[in-house]
Amino acid sequence: MKVLVVDDEPDVTAVVAMGLGLQHPEYVVVEHNSGLTASQRIADERPDIVLLDLTMPGRDGFSVLKELREGGGDVPVIVLTARDLEQDKVRGLELGADDYITKPFSHKELAARVEAVLRRYRAANTQGRNNVFTHNGLSIDFAQRRVSLGEKQIPLTPTEYNLLYHLATNAGRVMTHESLLSKVWGDEYRDEVHYLKVYVGRLRNKLEADAQQSRFILTVRGVGYEFPKSTH
Image (cartoon, rainbow, N blue to C red; front, side):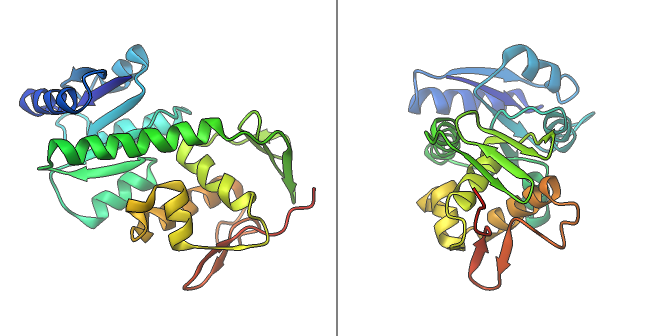
């Protein structure tokens, strides 16, 4: 398991590497201290997960994350920020971060976040259905983890796919906020409704011609979300 830590402060990457090493000696932790060359380092190292600082000089983590996701990169990313500001957290999630953690954090807290994200990533890659789900032009090949709309393939991150998977495989049923958060993010995230709202928004932007008039992910106000009954 390779972890790439990107932060402009060498002291921070060293502490993170030490902490993860103590909690998980089997991890290989690679440190990188420049936002300017972070994208290339991610491409070169091909890590299993990236820990990415948001506030770096020259090029910040928001820019790195945006380029990564727009280029189709689906490596799990946890953003690190010293600013406990709601808008930074939401912006990071909107750009495709899988989770965030605010400095200062304990070694155990960081290790738990890394484990949770990797667990979700593995779950998204091992769901074993063999059938193809179709609805209103949308096709989900569960065996190949391939999503397409008409003839166009839709690239999804593991978290996006995992959320769509649970909505589609429960088509016709209202999924509560708590249920979706527990299934996609884990029981410890049951109260983090903003994660769900941001990722539903990301899916709608990718799947809908008009994200305000959703055909696929219906909002049940105050309760949760529902995927319409499939036609296959």
